[in-house]
Image (cartoon, rainbow, N blue to C red; front, side, top):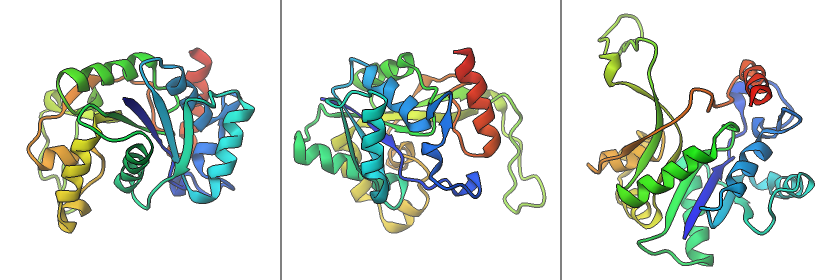
Length: 234
């Protein structure tokens, strides 16, 4: 089976003093998380979609989906974890308990606050996992990236031609991710910023899937205005 996991476990601290986590703020007349869930639910290549959110927001999220007519048969809302990869492991545990976990189980993980993801990106993630293995959605870096290890002076300026900006989905076979994640020591787990690095640490190639510049992550208040504009254009 092929599953989507929409990661909505954060509280959006960088958004500033708001009354609710950022995934529930409205853009384009709907909560951000609804836009994201609609796109995933509409993709026929996905068998089920799991939305993982803070415990206190589970019922609220389920009611939102009902209110906006997001497929109730396809979507399940469960509790997320303390960290990003803990949330992914919660999704895998849910899959294993309710559907079984085998070598063919595929999982696409996506930020709830990337509401402009397209069905093309989702489909290409699925085909890439099936044909090549784990993959990450990216776009080429357009700005020069400067590295500083001390925060005061430049350490190096990498060749921009070799650099990409990571987006989501990040996709893989769920059973493989579970085994690799559980094999990491605590020091290795502390270095994780996303799911793809679990495979990199174990020397497993991660393929690239072409993203879109408008597949933005809503993190700061200014991102809400950008998403509003982009949704209007789409």
